[in-house]
Amino acid sequence: MNGHRHRQEADSRRDHTGVILLITLVILVILSTLGYTLSVRVAARRHRDQYIVDYSIARHACASGMKYALASVSGLECVLISRPNEPDFSDVFALSELEYQKLLVRMEQSLADNRLTDPDAEERATKKSATNTRQARLNDLDDVNDEDADSELSMSHGIVEIPGPYGPPWPLVTEPLKLEIGTARVTVEVEDENAKYPLGWALLEDEKLRAEAGAGWTTFCEWMGYTATEIADLNKDLVAIAATKPFKTEFKPETTEGGVPANLRGQVTRTTPGSAVVRRTVGKKTISPAEQLQRQNTEFAKLFHSSMVNTALLSRPSIESDSRKESAMKYLGLWSTRHVNVNTAPRHVLEAALAFGSVVHAPKIAEAIIQLRKIKPVADVNEVKKAVLGYSDSIEDCRNFLTASSTVFTIRVTAVRGAAKATAIAAVSKEGDKIQQIAVICD
Image (cartoon, rainbow, N blue to C red; front, side, top):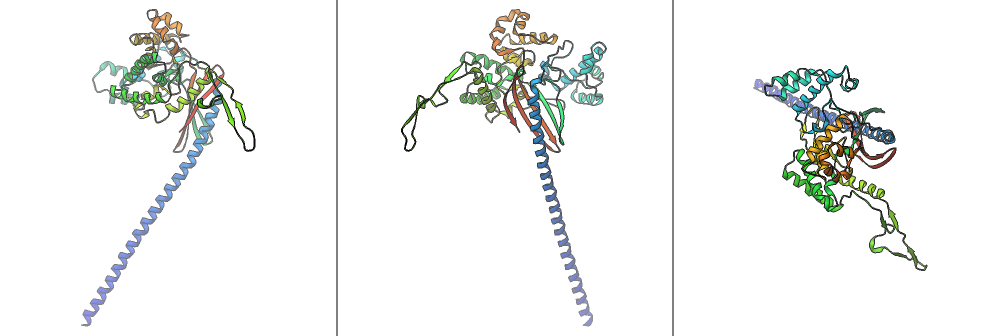
C-alpha cells in the first residue's frame, strides 16, 4: 500500500511539473509575440516618422529649386544645333528597343570615326563604358541569326544618346541641372512645350478647322499605336472638355461691364438702412487679347491636368525598357500651347500639325522639314515653303499653327531625400526676357 501511495505522489509531482513547464512555455511564446509585435510597430512608426521628415525636407527643397528655376529662366538661351551626320530624334518614339539599341551602336561608330575632325562629337559622346551590358541586352532582344547585326553590335565602345534639337535628348532644352539643397538632391529639367502636340487643337472652337484638327489628332494617336476604339474613347473625353470650354487660337479685344453678370448689367442699386437709394453706374472694361490668352492658358492647364483627361490611357507605355519609356503623354502639350516648332517637333507631331494644310501631303512635308533642319535650324516658315515649293500652298494653309522658335517651356523640379520624393512642374511663356508664368502643379 505504501509503495502504491509513493508512486501516486511521484506521478502527481511529475504532472504538476509538466503543467508548470507548459504554462511557462505558453507565457514565453506570448511574451515573444508581444515583443516582436511591439518591435515591428516601433520600427514602422520610426519609418513613417522618418519618411514624414524626409518628405518635408524634399518638399522644401523642391519649392526652393522651383523658385531658383523661375528666377533664372529669363536668362535661358535656347540655342538650336545642327545635326548633319547624326541620327535624328524624330523617329525614336516609333523604334522598338532592338532598333533603338542598334541605332545607338551605329551612331557610336559614326562618332568614333568623326572624333578627330569634329570636336562636338567628342563632347556629345558619353564617356561611360558599358559595352558588356549593352551587348547582353541586345543579345536578349535579338532572337534571330543576323550576322550583319551582330558585327555592328560588337563594335560598341560606350553609351551615347540621340541628341535633340538643343543637344540634350528630346525634349530637353538644356542638360538637367543637379543641385544639393540642404540634405536633398534636386534635379531641374526644362522642356520645350512647342515641340509637343497641343492637346487644345482637338477642342478647337472654329468649326472650319475641326475636320483638319480631327485628322491631325487621329494621325497622332495612330502613330502612338492606339486602336480605333481607344481613339473613340479619348475623343469622348475631349468632347466633354470642349463642352466645358472650347479652345480658341485667335483673340480679339472684348468689352465687359465691370465683371457684372449679364442679367445685372446697367445700373446697380444699393440701399443701406436709414439712407436714400444709391445708384451706381458700372463702367465698361476692355479685355485685351493677351489677357484673354493668359486666362485661357490658366484654365486649360487646370482642365488638362484634371480627371477629365484619360491620363491612364495616354500614359500607357507604347515602348518601355531600361533606357527609355515612350507614351502619348510624353508628346502631348498640356499647357494650352497653340503652335508647333518645326525645328523641335518629332515626326508624328509635325505630321499632325501639317494636317491643317493637307493630310495627304503632311508626311512628305514633314520628311522635308526633318532633312532641312538637320543641316541647320529653320529660320521661319517661309524657308520651309522655299525648300518644298511643290507644297507651298499646303504649308501656307497651316502657317498659323507653326513656328520656328519656341515660347512655352515647362520646368520640372524633382527633389529626393531618403525614400521620399517631391515633384513640381511649372509652365512659363518666354518672349525675349519677358517671362509669364502660366501655372504650377505640385505632386
